[in-house]
Length: 315
Image (cartoon, rainbow, N blue to C red):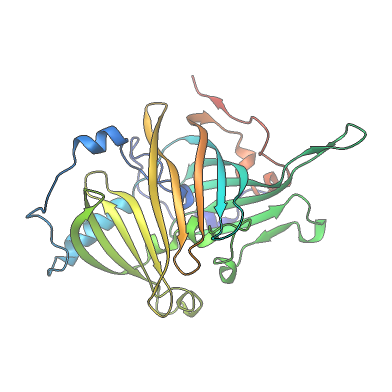
């Protein structure tokens, strides 16, 4: 059995080869490397900034549509670490691996999180790691499936219902909502204009959940996104609660060059109410690899990819 039919309900336009990773399900965003960014920084106010003025919504639609078309045509692998930093409590880390590919309707991502590392018992036998496995399809018809390595047969494979999109993953501040980024395809938006974020020219948008989606409105009143003007890259996300207060901020913090392409190497998620924070940090990565198709199929969730070497670099 392959990925469920809903994964293939719509074709997305051809992807640009050098558009770089688009959050992967929300975790990674296309952007240039730090030296490239610094070389283009402007200082002081720009006469081109329009935030707070009356701006063309048609122009905003063009910018937003171009962003939605971005992606990476190829497989990729990221070994990463979640650094979970609850305020006033001990920091803990969760290792994992992320495998990504492109489908006709957007990025398809497999994530394995090691909830408990493997151990050696008194008889020198390996106790396998306890692993949460996620299969995430981004795009207009986004959906997600999970399977825990220690789950019983009856409840091993579970579609993640939309009412669970806001539950923490592995005790972190990341949620399925953060990874799937459904707001990127919401049709109700307001283009605020052009400003600067971290000295970079940036376009700002408000996105609102569909009026008929009452469940989503119980969790989110709106999402404000910041797109780098030059690279049309998502560099910050602000998620607002139903009472219109800022609930969460997702920020790209650091970058690295991998196989000639720039990828974000650190993304921070901050809960603005609790002040807790989770840091996603890439430990090593490969782009343009050859991944077994089964890791992106439902039956592939029956085995771990964490702790194994499944990818080889294409010649």
